[in-house]
Amino acid sequence: MKKLLLATAAIALGATTAMAEVKVGMITTLSGGGAGLGIDVRDGFLLALKQSGRDDVELIIEDDQRKPDVAVQLSDKMIQSERVDVMTGIIWSNLAMAVVPSATAQGVFYLSPNAGPSQLAGAGCSPLYFNVAWQNDNLHEAAGAYANEAGYKSSFILAPNYPAGKDALTGYKRTFGGDLAGELYTELGQTDYAAEIAQIRASGADSVFFFLPGGMGISFLKQYADSGVGLPVVGPAFSFDQGILQAVGEAAVGVVNTSQWSKDIDNPTNAAFVESFEAEYGRLPSLYASQGFDTANLLFSALDKAAPSDKAAFQAALEAADFDSTRGAFRFGPNHHPIQTIYAREVIKEGDVYTNKIIGTALKDHADAYASECKM
Image (cartoon, rainbow, N blue to C red):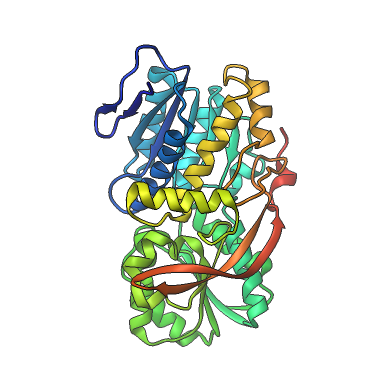
């Protein structure tokens, strides 16, 4: 039987008569702002674990409360007391920067299902660190590429003032060929955007690009729609993903966003994932759920070849990425970040549900800009 420790609830599901061979520590956001993101990563991972039928994995889950100091404390406990072999789960880049370098320095593999700060893709890369989602800049680079195709000449851009926000605006500016009508960093966790919307209105922009994940994006989109500014909006999937769209509602319809995953990617693994996730949890999967699912299946594919204690062999097994991804073909670049196609999606309404449909390809087989700085 498989032993699954959910430390956040202080309960164990199932039973076991022997110790699991591999301990996996998941630190993610399960309460407060942004909890939906962590819940989806967790649920995607748990679905893959259930479907795998493995009895050699013990999963310990903790809630970081979106606080770097809490994440560090949990990481230290998992590594030093729980003796985990592999870690995963972090959503936010500032928490990743607080945890990942220390974890890998202590010989623990880290598989990121979300956060992909530029520092860990470039000079701060590690043989033990793999990102299964993307490097932070990627979806924003795709948004800039789409804005060019759409003919926008002057964008107003904004994002929160933390590592992922800085990577977001850097990524958009890397590919966008027009001018900037304005550039703003907002407070992390901000919910009132009246001042920013007033600046957009007065800027002379012909388009708006924003990266505001979780509740921040919900607040901005509703206030923007109510403002009547009316400029076309482009953004990454983080503010237009499945869980968020239901809260935003009609204000999001027609907005184009960029993503490496969508529920309508046409391959058997993705179709089965979408169907089984909805059956298991009673809701459509999000981008984050797909990333949790893929992270688990990457891990399991590596465990079939080597144990984490054999670091060279386990690293090679992870690098091979011999698993069926929801995205189709999957491969890592030399810095252990994906090389992948990023799509343009449009928000639509299907019956009573707001969702996305793919309308084109923004960037094909795209690698991140920092791989050349990574020396393993």
